[in-house]
Image (cartoon, rainbow, N blue to C red; front, side, top):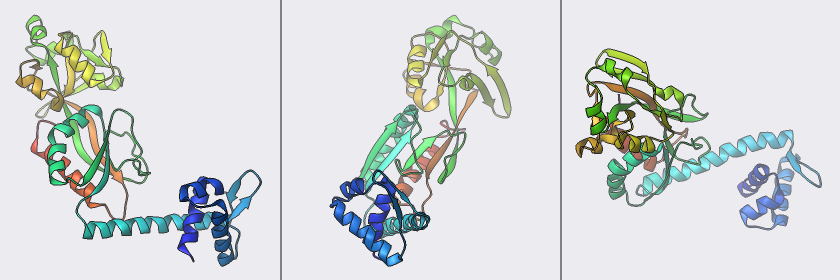
Length: 298
């Protein structure tokens, strides 16, 4: 079987068009048609149902398409394996994560990783929208999924450790001595997910569950942080977001002996026979950073 013909068939099947396949392959439509014709002659089977307006795979075509995808995957893995053996850690690496976790990566992980692996081209997408990992749009994601996508590998990193914070002025004006005082606090609520306002507080083996209330709501951690800095109430925020504000005195750590068990964070990447070195080294850098900072996770 001519593998060039097979590759042409695969593109036609995926695009559902000889014309689009020719554009992608940067060849003439006639050459695409001849490749498919030669492949059909070699297999003695029709691969497409053709009409004047559309094409679709025959039963034989469907079977060949499945096998062709497997062959394409093997070819890609072979290329990655050779590059991993013969070359330095290099190539594009696309990373997606929530905004504030992304900022923490940029502060604590990316500079040293970039210095160690300067030939890796990093592409970031930090935000609430969950990007596709299983289809290869992104190489690695740091997300809190309720249900994992298909064909991915997920490594639990633990639960993000949130802490309760407020401005110094708010702390002076309100009684914040014992954990029971939390019921009198005006909270800046998270409007992105109402469940995130049901706090599970942890202190050693002790747990304290409370649904907090307030008259201010916002959908991003950054805006909630700014409202807390302005003395508008108490907020539950990731420790890695607010640690600098504790150090410079802009924020007060409320009930510091208690931690908020927030979202379960997973490191997610697509299933592959061979995981490229650039992905292995980046994942290792992130997990080592989290292990070295015990205040970030529970």
